[in-house]
Length: 239
Length: 118
Image (cartoon, rainbow over all chains, first blue to last red; front, side, top):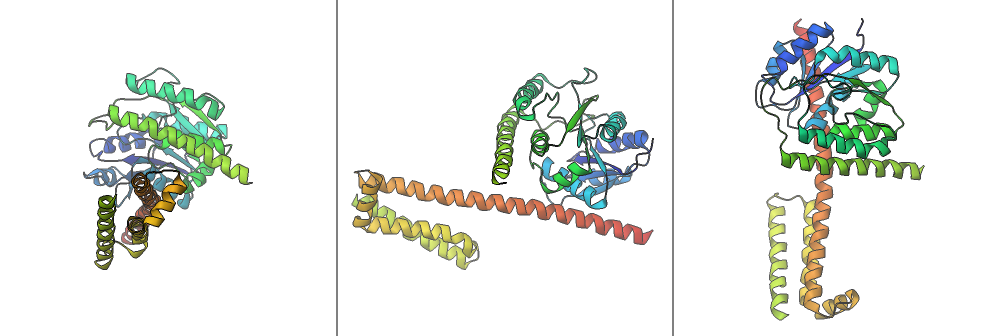
């Protein structure tokens, strides 16, 4: 299979113990497809480890948070002329063996975005009870907004084509991007599809998600969704 | 009421002096001092002019001038904080865009150096 104009981006923050393995696995699955690690100003050797593993590195001069970091990757990919970008996390939770599945869906479905959904098939590591509850909550909220069901709206394992790349280069949610990005896409009549993907435990290190942060996440994302709807409706009303 | 007015006058004058000295030392940029100076001047006028305060409390439908004064202080500072939230948000957006651009330019530079070395 030819992977042509595909770029793999891996946002990473203090992931020196994981990012090297992730890049190696991507290379094993995808051969010489370019891998770009988005180093969000890590305090450890994430960038050096990534370079040693054969990836290119886009280093943020200061910590931007996930959305800002991913948008920088989208901007660079758009400027470099890539047609497809697949993003997987640098903590090793996303199984690179699913990249061909996402890529194929991107090319065959004509959708602007493909989500690697952890619930599409109950295989592999499953999220914690609290997180599953949160995902269920957002699925319910998003169902009428998107006009269709979405199984895993919080998944960071996503592929986008050039149309979505152009959009996200200009406008991308900056803090917790996954759910808001779906609303941004939907409001512009872009389409997405979900494919089943395997999730794994972090290889090492600790997740930064705490109950308090989860609560903040829910409030922040709800507000973001609401603002995106208002923004779009205002533009439509002005037209 | 007199005591409250005097306290507010001292507070307003103190705020004006603080902001002006901060501007002089370049701790605050002139454009960001305008909101604070405007708020301090409004409070100074209200604390010294009983007719202005009387008109304000009548307009607000509050027959207790000290309460009207306190509500005005609250409203003025709420407005100043709102203005600064807008400014901070704009600055954050600009910072993110600049940081991304710097990162991308550094990437191009590094790629250029690497291709030169090769």
